[in-house]
Image (cartoon, rainbow, N blue to C red):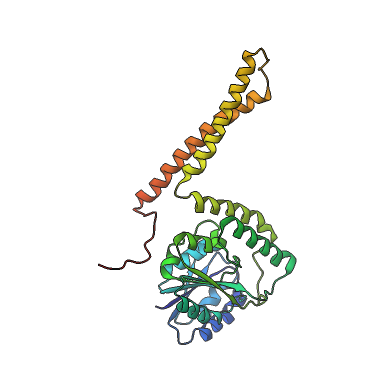
Length: 309
């Protein structure tokens, strides 16, 4: 199988028939499979998929609504293709861009081709503006300079997609996860259409989730394999700062100053205790990290290529 098209859907019944038709036209002559992952739909989405399914179509029905990231992970796990492409189920992504992305990948031997939504057909205040701010913040925080983190349309080589490690709501940070895996990534403009049917599941209320997930991504990217460097450094700084403050209060006490009830004394004690807690947290986090790799026989590295005998 050359290509797997993974499409997470939830309450997209009105978009299924035209989406399947467009994919069939766009990928005519390309060996492919279509994997719909139904993420707890309450409408006739699954019935519509089964009604209009082609011989290339499969549907995975999750037992409840888990979220887009989990639906993506389920689809990737089920994919058999050498290449795996992620596609939205709302017809805002254009399946005709997939062959162009495959050609771009072949030309540069890229591992990931990410889409940039050109002339985006969304409202400015509630969709475009928050997206621009989120893209800027993620680029600055992670150092992974992708223009459009919110575009679902991305093409992966099989080994990259299978090793993304998608959990929680990290689908927005797929480029960061791919970079951590060591993937070579490029981007290209893709078409974007107004929603054909159904209601968008995204809005400005997701801003806090984006920020909290970004904090997690920064920790995983910078300290995922060495958590002691974060907790230990912060703990040592806090501990010695507390010791210095306590020593100063003790010196003033010896010089005849009143020390009881002084805010500086409480601050010194607080920093000392916090420093000890941070250092011990670092020990525990490091042991958990080692257990994670060793218990599953995982390696903290990926080999891209082996040459020679």
